[in-house]
Image (tube, rainbow, N blue to C red; front, side, top):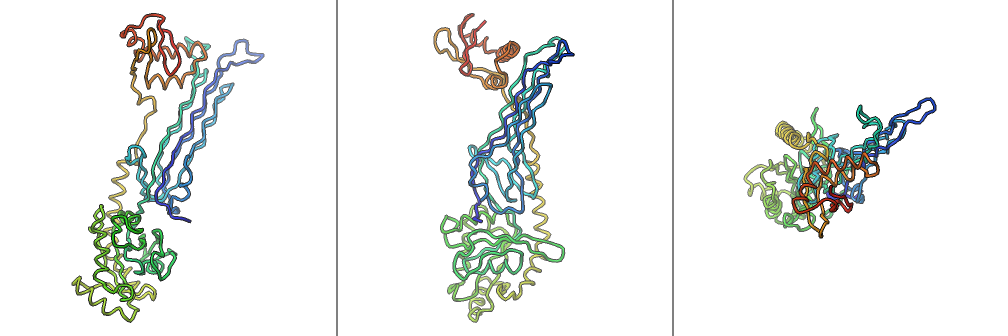
Length: 430
């Protein structure tokens, strides 16, 4: 499967079902009352974190995802069925942005984390809902609300404990294959790995997630090669392994090779160079490795951990070192990060759409006797209330009065029998 770490998609929750006007009609009931049922709620859209997904490939080609509309109500107080919800599974570590504002909507940090991203429309009431002691034969009914629509951008920033970085041919794929359950493609040429590879590594009763980051080159932080596409995946790692080939065939100037990776980590915007870094020299099975090892140790003035990934030499010792030195630190940082994000984003609560709308109106004189009314509040209720029964017309007129549209028009010189135009529909001023 092709690796895709960013995509854009439009999400559209389902419309609420409409309520209907209906009357009870049976032989043994002489005066049946209202029995029009409510519609069903529109389907919601949820985002779910899933460890089994590692790419946005399956979502990339879906330009639009629509949840099911609620079903309209029926006679005999029959409520419509709710629309089917839609669930979008994304890799853990996916950040979701509003494509217009670029603001973060949610950060998916845990397996199974579920976030309601688009709320389905509220159902419309049938006339049985509006029956009361002073209105026993209501012709009132409502359409269902439209569901929320969002255009979003998804970006993967993998949550890994240990990221393995290095130049092409450092042996990263071989290392992660021999220490974990990952099975990347391996070959003795540059850029064998074209996407990050994740694998779990176990030591005693503990587990860490390792990542093989594709080979970086000089200028990666500025967009050269494949590098910048994968440097961003190191952002959420806690420890870095800088794997470097000690073979003179791979690195004739090993100090320059070492500096290349360090410089790219330093230049990248999110301070990757401040993460704990373990220098690991690979390919000690090669006959020409001794000279490069001495040269690099002299430059760093510290002992380098040496391995042969292909022969598994010192592999167990490297795993032991990482778990003993860093496991507790990683666990502590991980819990802090998830808790902070959860408090800010995951527990968000939504109000109904109508609660957000201000009761205001803007009046524009189109020509003598004609006034255009622009009002988000009236636009909402004009959709909600079908103007097809006397009761509904009365109810919508009450909405016009509540936002003072008629008063504002009269303040601009409107007279009785002049016309107000609301969303293309004409209303006569009393």
